[in-house]
Length: 437
Image (tube, rainbow, N blue to C red; front, side, top):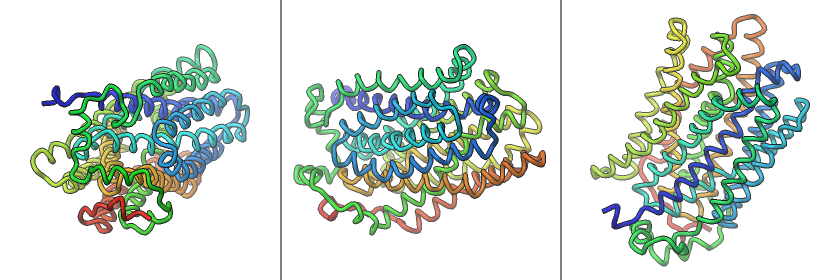
């Protein structure tokens, strides 16, 4: 059946996968150079956290703007502009010489990288029927993990051989290569010269995918009108509570391994890569499981929420990371990997709830709003917890206590998010395109 339908939509998914890989590779570079920059630029944990906060603040602002921008100019142009600009920002890190300079570069990277997920989710909404969207999202979202895997396997070695500046330059240039393929291969399904009629019909096979509905997708609507829907707030609060956990892994995992087990530089590559390899598997499995339930005749929304509840429980073993790590470092790496894997499975589904509940023309905007709340959560965690927590406990020689507290936060966030989302949207309520004002 799949051969008769066609598979070109998966080519489009692969383009989004590689964009997401580059996106996360660029943002992960600095965490792997923390020790180097601390030595060369005389940073402390507070300086590093300030640079991290600069990224998150600009990322939050960027998400608020990017979703609306992409809904307005279209997926192809919006994604191309975002990728080109964040690649420039990534390269410019090489010119920074101070905390202020890095903060400016990180702010530029944050506001431009914000375009990736609104554009990616909108691409999936345009190219996949609802029953395949979680799998497609899980596949492209695994690019975040591949980027985080490639980073420790390349960045420390580039920095050691050519200097830390070239780590930023080499990774930043990859986005320009991706742009060549994106501009050549991406069109809307209805306009694509290589898409068969049967695959186009399959993409548009949802009950509400009608010619009249498609005509509504280009009509403007008020951005603020999205805030009156509980569906928007369910997604936003879910991101607010869980996105900061992924930020924590991304920015602080190398420091955890160095602080607890005294490994750094190229030696840190294998354990960090192991965590993100597990995360990549979780992202793909997280997208596959609800599709399996749907094929078993579960309603789409029930399949999605049941899967997310399972993933929330799978994060809980991280509570024992410190205890197990006292036995063997690799036990700590394993349970952190399980938690990171569960996060990516969760992420594949929470993103897909947007296209479950909103018409295609609003997907970028709602994704941007939720992403902004996720970035705000990351900012609050950094300012209220990490900055004070890590500086204090490191100063008194008890950094393991700071990580223990953070792992408690990580373990509890997803169940709380799931409960709030369930209370706000206990059953699916799809917003019609004509209802947007």
